[in-house]
Image (tube, rainbow, N blue to C red; front, top):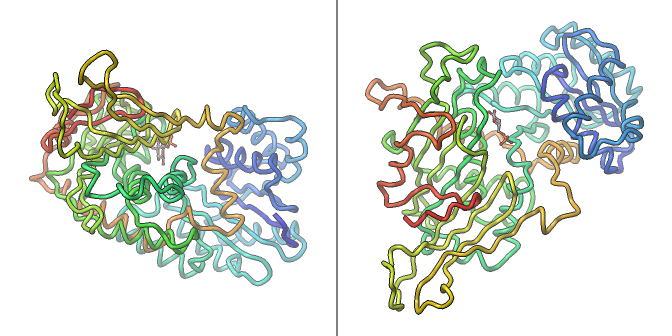
Length: 489
Ligand code: BG6
């Protein structure tokens, strides 16, 4: 990355999990691949008192554990001297001034700076304000960018307020709102699947697609994050960002160019076309035992699972139902998008089985794990007259790109932020449109007439009501990525 100026990456909240699990390992991997700027420093900031050496040791342990595949002692030795630590409470103006002093001394002149807010969201406003008052947002001798972790707000009003506040200090071109799902290789590949090929796009519409499903299932439960999660719930934690972003990539119109403005314009356009969700088209549930987790209110009604039915009011998607579900403590970890196509208009075969029992064609985009794409279609069963069976054509990253280790999402996103490419980050209007979809559901759920939160057994696929949501349209949830060929509905 050629640039005359040195670059400082300043991580606020450097003692938190994200820094040693994701951020520093990602930066280390970028360094390993020769993708870091020629001159750079990574400065950790948090309240705990640590020496530079303590910080380096902690980061080394994290990188060794979480980037085991790529860890190389010699590379680490070359990388470690770029790591620095400056203690302080960034919500205190004096500490911010001291931090600015440390950076200025360290940089010894003009430098670029990337700030990373890896702190509790309620601290964002104060830290951003302090960055403003100490002159740290001004681009008068190098660029200044800020990465803001999710959640960006807790509803539409708070997201608007936060946008306003951040805009009072930083210009939109300096702001990178992160959604790590957009950094996943397989999520990025959705656009390549659709727009670097000719065979999919002509059928990617209401004339050929009969329903689309987005599943993001996790086996983990709330773990040690109850303090945050019990306030948030699955809709804010997963739908407002990850699931809707996947949906946007699958449903957007082709952008005219592959750049941040064009891509985000198209996402905003399609997200704005989502029809307000009816409460009858929602399901919410909580896994048994959730309320016993440490930090969860004993009578908590927070959903750990949700399923939604959505419609997109535009020419391409009118009449096509979109089903989305996500939850914790489910049977399998899988993130996948399944596009199911319409049945053939007429079946000429003398079928021994009921024509309706034919499985329609499905295209499954396997976001994780076992990243790939599967296309299922019908084939004639050999040695029968007209019996068919569903078969699959499968593309697996592990086979086709054997030599490549799929990078962690944070690696791509940090590199893009360093390069000034905001394509995979959420723009201010986009974040507001996203909250605009979620807010009415949250409000509807607060209504005393709304169906109550149901429960589900950990290790299952969630409550029966989620199955009913698709069943009433004559469908069932499909598992195109984990080989369950029972889906005939
Ligand atoms: C985070 C959520 O954004 O995404 C977590 O806060 C969730 O609750 C995680 O576990 C899932 O990410 P991934 O990459 O493991 O699918």
